[in-house]
Amino acid sequence: MQDSRVYLVHIRDHINRIEAYTVEGKTAFFADLKTQDAVIRNLQTLCESTQRLPDAWKATRPEIGWRTIGDFRNVLAHQYLDIDLI
Figure 1 (spheres, rainbow, N blue to C red):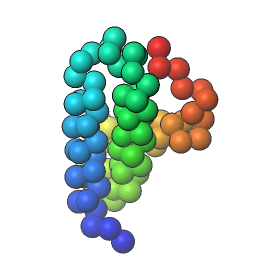
Figure 2 (figure 1 turned 120 degrees about the vertical axis):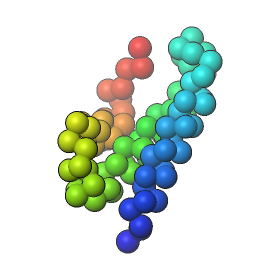
Figure 3 (figure 1 turned 60 degrees about the vertical axis):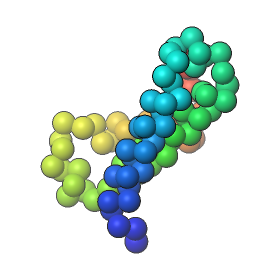
Figure 4 (figure 1 turned 60 degrees about the horizontal axis):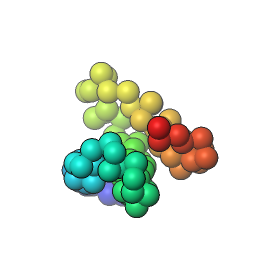
């Protein structure tokens, strides 16, 4: 079993990557399929990492929609044809 702190690092790193990939704004994002793919993949991995955090940790942050994050990951991974970026 991974040390749970590894997932916190993954979450932070994926947030940083998404911010870096989208720094040029909405127009640049929509113009570049590679950027779209990178952002979607990083969102998927970020969401997966949140699901691997201990429930006790998540319970200390009830204002975060943990279930919603998990549901979003499932859409990204399994219902990807339903994703509408616009």
